[in-house]
Image (cartoon, helix red, strand yellow):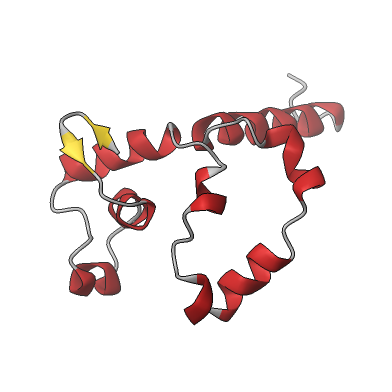
Length: 110
């Protein structure tokens, strides 16, 4: 994955560089080294298809119980309506739903 001339070798690295710095990411050598690198990772993450999270687990299936639970209980039918989206598109879709809900409750009446 490349964005803004920066290469991210894996989804795991992209996630680590796109999120706030964590000591574990620093120790693993995958934390963003600058604010610019973090922003580039965030922009690349927004363009990442949701399906990539199913094809590239962040933690190996064999070594993590939570990963196994997520993959073993994944409901493809429930995922289908959003499976074509990127992370950014999914975020916008969720925000639109939230906006519609609050608007229907009269929270945005001016």
